Amino acid sequence: MKSLSSRFDRYALGRRRFMAGTAGLVSAGLVSQSALARFFQDASQMTGVDPEVWNPETIQALAGTIEVDTAAEVHAVVPESATGDLQYWNVGPTQASPAITVQIYDEFQAAFQQYYPEIALENQNIGYNDLLDTLRTAAAGGAAPDVAKLPILWGVEFAARGQLQEIVSRTSA
View 1 (tube, helix red, strand yellow):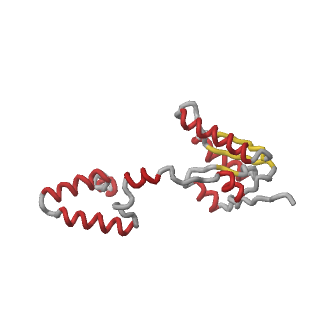
View 2: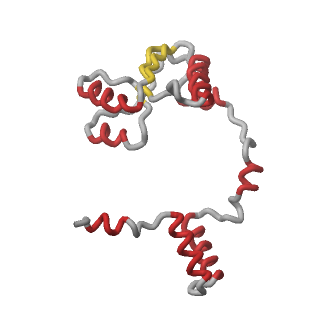
View 3: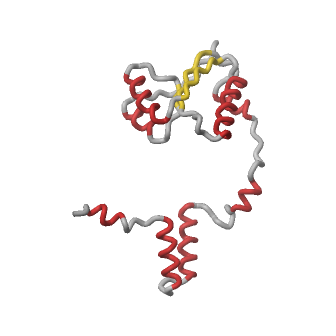
């Protein structure tokens, strides 16, 4: 006997099913095109995104128009004079990663050294399948890195255990 949840899985409303159903209702005359337009207009009001303003043309026109002084931005958080050692664990590129991923990763490492030449960055690129267990073990043993770049939901576990701390910059006097 199928479970109740598996019987209803076939009724799950995904994007394709929603669009197909909507098209069917409109073509059958059960929903007018104006009612459908009002629905989407109301939806844009709920999200605060106005499709008349935020469309591909507007976004393309705005793209690349902001100039940022990266050095000033990062040094406002951590002064250029900062010194010390920093352990950084992350899931970086693998042999199977696209070249652009490797390039961006390498550029990050080079930029860090350029902006903070007096900080020794000990970077550990740990495979995705190993990082969570490696961090759990290290945190339990009091040997976690200074910084770890985590997938979005992993941090919740460490926060619940009280194993996360705010990063505080200690500048020399």
